Image 1 (cartoon, one colour):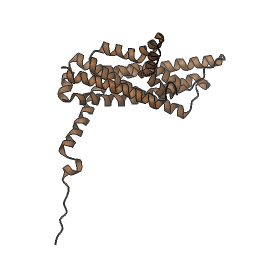
Image 2: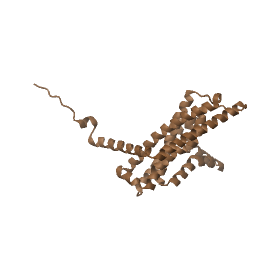
Image 3: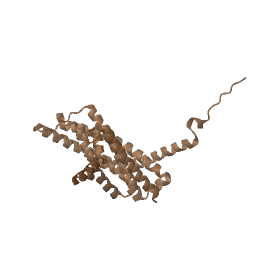
Image 4: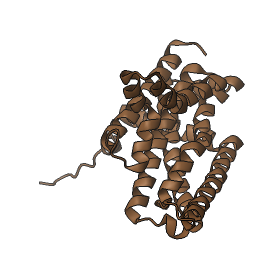
Length: 272
């Protein structure tokens, strides 16, 4: 009696055709968005500008700390702190990449090509978010490393730091910049206007946290503590106030999710 060995069909090894098709569509959408985002000169110039501003800013802060320390003032601080202080402002150049990821396509009309190539509008939004988040994490990590080295060189003994402090700054900046970029991307998808998105970005990330406490109302002060800029500050500095890193991560993720939700509604229920 002979035995016959049966070889599994290729489809059983790779999954059903429908599943393989879904994976292929997602991979293609992400690759498509990566090609578009990295293939335009504006992305490169914004990243280069952000890098130069970060290096210049950390150099000035480090040199100032050293000069003040040599004059007897207590200005010593870990060099990664000088870096994240600078990046809290120079990150605007990276966030502008998130703005243009949608608004530039609407202004040029290329959004039609995008939606024809990737018919699922939710898939377009998620693919852009994945690419932008990955890029923001990489850029944020590099900026902290470069900024820390520059600040440490300028501040000398007034900028000494530990590996743990550098690790917190790198991880916190990478995560916060990624989530903030996703939030800005969602706003851009909803507004479709470069000027409107930039204005909204500055108001939410910078202006409100300074303006709300001025009114002297406790609930407004509490609200300011849960704005994305405050949460990002907690993440990059590993601060304990006004809450810990876990709450800060939750708050920032909530803002990113809200931005994506608003962006999806704008994509889903409005014509091109």
